[in-house]
Image (tube, rainbow, N blue to C red; front, side, top):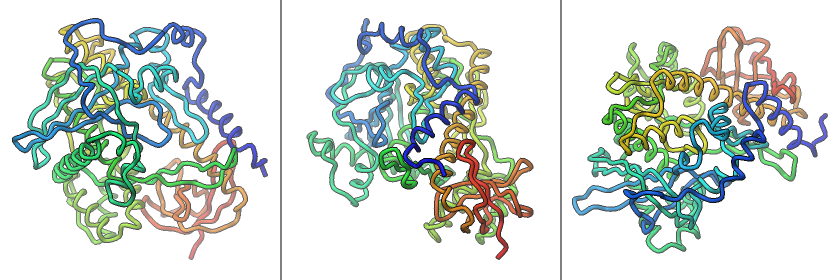
Length: 490
């Protein structure tokens, strides 16, 4: 058995190795670090036309341990019954210039990679957690997406413009979510800022309206199970499942809306863009079968609204097992990808969100497509030519898709190595499980009692995604992140 006191060190070593194996850079070059050292402070405006919005009740909401804060939000009730929702996105481009060494590293990796033991940021910490982060009580240059939302959740108007803002509170999903759901006290940072509690309540109400409107159009109510290891010192003590709450939904719904506004703004200026696409599912026939197993009939032709109706009814009927059903549907929907689009072209859109105009634009500290989009936005706002042509955007979209897949595999492999460390003392035990993957390359199942996925190496014949089964743990390989099961016949 591996020395349990070295879990974190073991995982960090694995993470570095797998980053390199997947074509990702785990460390910043000397050239990048020297370039960062020459940056003395946050970006300041050198010209006019910048709106000063520092007096608004801006706040950030993110994970408990997040320091790379990309956006702030605020709401304003209007006399006609509508509500203005403003999303301020950090102006990362102001310090990360095209073709700089810093940009080159970001362009190579295209995303921050968050593993079980270590974070590999897309941008150096001096930028992503300090000079370009939306830190509390710090003035920051931003791009604001300004939206007017009606009482029924429809978007009545929008604008995009540069501004300077100041965050008045750094908030977290857990505490804000519990407070909004009346399951916990008002967070102290909220109580400390006069008027912020009322503003967040207004934001929550508008987010719920946006959510209801999107789901009425067919956006899917999916609930994934994401687990992160819990450490006692450097030893893994368990796995913690992270779920959605009203605070995560608030940010999600505002970001979806802001991303749609950003796409349409670029299109109105005849600019190309990098869209986020989730194709119509190729395994719709299996989704139909899964729905039938739950007593629900779906049409033969892919229909997001019908699928959302099924998911809503299934969640109401059995909320405890709904995450397992969600995982099945997510696997069958397939992954998203980036695609370059010319203005006016008919985009395929995002099947899971039931939106045609969608991109990633609100996390430029963490994702390179968002930084590319920010540069396009700033060029459009300034009346300049697009900094990227369609051929370069197409190549970038393909590269970002490839690197995102690589980053996901790194995160999964290190996560499995963490799970293997936790399970290595339980070889031979049996568990109830759900099949999460079934293809020529192998069959996978996730345990129901622990959020751990492994490969079914024996007895997998006839298993398909979404089926329940019982498995026995045969072996683990911490270094490779392998967890092997065999199917146990009842």
